[in-house]
Image 1 (tube, rainbow, N blue to C red):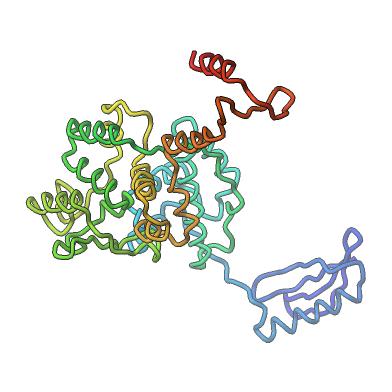
Image 2 (image 1 turned 45 degrees about the vertical axis):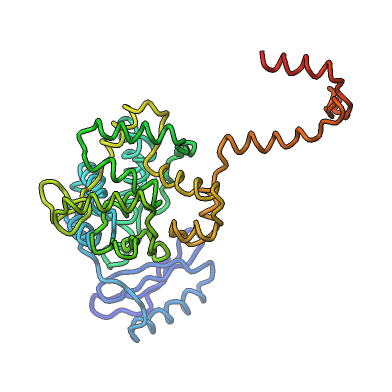
Length: 379
């Protein structure tokens, strides 16, 4: 049933009944809109009157129809934003190329959650879940910016979930492993790798912070390095240099080329983009079980705490916004754990020690039985 309330020329405003409910049918500009109201006709008539008044007063906020660009057309704009606002835009370039190969030809509004699920499945055949997640996160951010800039009404893939990532255990280098890693760096074809590793171990700076360092940030008179391009505003900090870090910077300054501490070999006006493959090769040559570059930062923090530095100081050196984040880096080394449980040896009294029998009841273990137990454990 359709009831026409007003008709002038080609413009018709009406209410109609369908499947037990009343709807309003009206125009806002050249756009036709139909809205479900409810089971009562009187409510539909009132709703239509309200909508007509809103349209007449210009209060009905309708966006004009957008000419949504294709993925490859929007990509240059996103890259420009990244160069101006993101420290990781160079590394991000590889992810964007991967996304472009898959989504090129589609308008941003045509990309669906199912498209992203297919992308995830295809990429998992070639790379690890962590890599797929970084790529999907880039896509989500791109579409969020498209919404912010008025290119899209909504982000069509906002609800897509990331993959579960395998969390690798944190690794802390021993002094012996450190020597082996530095020796392995000398065996790679990347002369910049060894000083980068040394600075990571002795300043706690992130990889991106080291690679983007400029000589203006290094103060030899005060023996400090200033971190400007930090991960967040809390990460902007000044780090005192110990003797090892100072000497490393000094040696690098003798062959200074351009404004960057680690310039790109073919173009000194640019910094080195990444050293992932060189570091991976050094780890292989050293024979050390899996270690990531970020574990050098873990090692820096753990060594400080073990040497007696308080967490507030470590937090400021790492550039963390909260002490909770710093506590994650203050790992107890295995030797510390062994020393801690050995404190329980003080429970031994007169050749006996307390134990729990199979029933969970505390008892006393005779000295002769104790020796047998220790021999058995040693075996």
